[in-house]
Length: 383
Image (cartoon, rainbow, N blue to C red; front, side, top):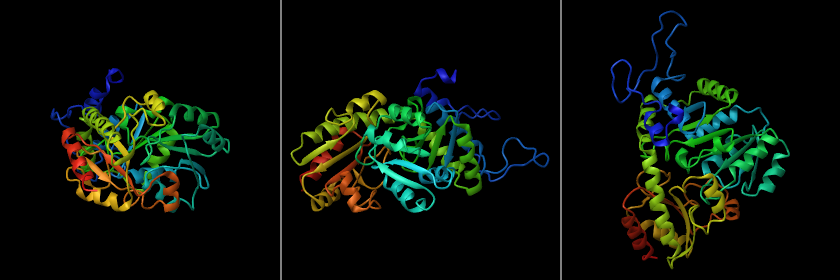
C-alpha cells in the first residue's frame, strides 16, 4: 500500500502510524537516553539513543519513503552527515565535486578533509568535463543541483549513467528541490543527501541532515561511524522534522508559485541586471530542469545594477524579507552570498563562479506574494 501512495499521503503517513500502545494519532517523543534490557544483550531493538531512537526511526522511515530509498540515516546537521560520508571512504580517495556548491560544503572539503582525500572541483553542467574526470576512476562524484547560489543544473540521469560505467559512486545534494520536486535515486544516483534544516523541516527551528540510499553496504558503513562518533539527531528535533514534513507538499507548491511570480517581475525591473531561476526560459539549463524536476523550487538569484554599496543599501531596506543565512523556511529570507553563506570561498574562486558583490539570493517564503513584491520594490527604490 505504501509504495502505491502519492507523495502528499506518504509525507503524512509514512512513519506516522498512530502509537500502538495508546492510539495517540501523533507519535510520542521518546525523550530517553537508554532502554531497559530483559537480559544482557536482550532488548526490544533499542539500547542507547545515540545508536537508535524510536522517534528518529519514524523520521528515517518517512524520509526513505519520500526519496524512494530502502535506507535513511538522520544526523545532527547536514555537515555532520557529509562528514560521516567522507570518513566512510578509503583514505586518499579522489572525489569530484561541483564547482558551485554551498560554502559550508566547500569549506568542509577543502579544510577539514583536504588531508584525508583529494578533491577536484569542476563544472558538472559540462558533461565532457564530467566524463574526463570520471575516467580517472575517482571514488565519488558529488553533485549539487540546482547549485548554491548560481542555480546551475546538472543532468543527474546522464551523470549517474556515466558514473556507473566507471564504477564511481554518485551523490546528489537535493536540498534546494526537496524530495517533492526531485528524486535523484529514481534518476540513477546512488546516494541523496539533504540539509533537513531547510525545506524538509521548513520552519527555521531545527538543524539536521540526512542521507538516503539503496546501497546497504554504504549505509551500514555510515551508520557504524555515526554510532561511533555520535552526531545523531535528538528525539525532539526528529519529532519537529516529522511535524514539518506533513506540510512539505503544500509548502513546496506555495514556494514555487511565489518564486516564479517574483522571478518574472524581477526580470522586467529596471534596477535588475539579470535573474537566475530554473523556471524561467532564460535559464541556461531550463530544458534539463523540466526533464528531471517536477517543479522549480523557491530559490532565486539575481544581480542588481551597481556593486557592494548598492547591495548593502538594498539589503538593509527590506522589511518582510529577513536578512539571514539559511533558506527553505515558510518565511522569506534574503542574503548576500559573497559576504554571508559563501564568505569561506576564496574571492578569486567566487569571481570565477560569478558570485559578485551585486549578487543577491532569495529564499522565497509562502507569504502573500503581492506583499513580498511590494517589499522588494520599496527597497529597490532606495538605491
